[in-house]
Image (tube, rainbow, N blue to C red; front, side, top):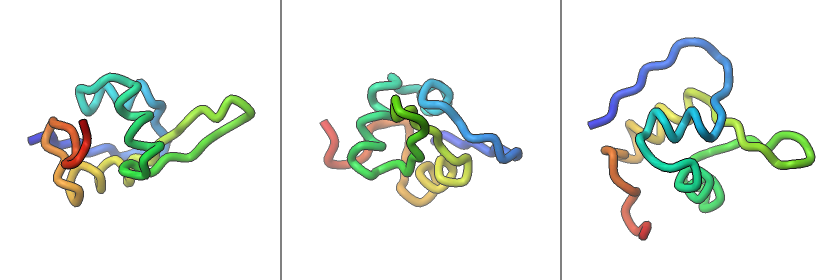
Length: 73
């Protein structure tokens, strides 16, 4: 099981989330697009940022265990 405890309030980039979850950044983008992982979009490019609390919730409540969420290819 993956356990992440993050303390400060700086938001995470897609690459940082991917590194913490041991997945490809495109997987993080896909989960955000599907609403499985909450994200904020910034600027005209739509860069995603993720709140640490949302990442912890994704891991704890949604049962993320190092594999894709159920129902995902």
